[in-house]
Amino acid sequence: MKQIAVIERPIENNITVFFSTYSLYLLIKMESNLLCETLQQKEYQVECMQLFTRFKSPNIESYAGDPMILDIDNVCHPVRNLERAVLFYRDVLRLELQFIAKEMGWAEFDVGGSTLALREIKSGFVCSQSSICFLVTEIEEEVERLKKEGTHFLGEIEDIPGGQGRVVGFQDVDGNRLDFYEPPQ
Image (cartoon, rainbow, N blue to C red; front, side, top):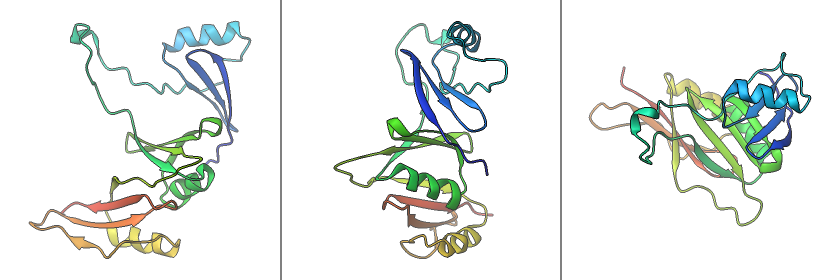
């Protein structure tokens, strides 16, 4: 698993650069070629970096300019300590860390093409009242593995009535509820 060390640096109003130990990720809201031109004007090396377009580009021409919700960009849980939470989600849950912006108290993980975000709350922290449910194929093995890591489970694996699969609840390091769901075979 790659470990990412990040320094965040604003360049322009709508561009933030994240320098990592193995690549340069960009939080952008513009086309990649325009971004490359902007970075070259700012004397950044462009040829050897990876571009990560954070904002999805749905086909919005067909919506005739009407404002509307197009998609869910991310689901976010609050955390007390971002570094400790990142260790749990990356190393214990084995989620793929996309980037971390320490100065913003923000981290994002890719979970099957969806984005799970963590937001650090410095004061007045209250754990989420919502649950994030992860789809798994081998629920018993995942539960055993997480128990060995010291994860707190809220009960045993339960069968969902009507043969709809199995589910179990557990908590992250800050008490946020998470679930594993295994669909019927």
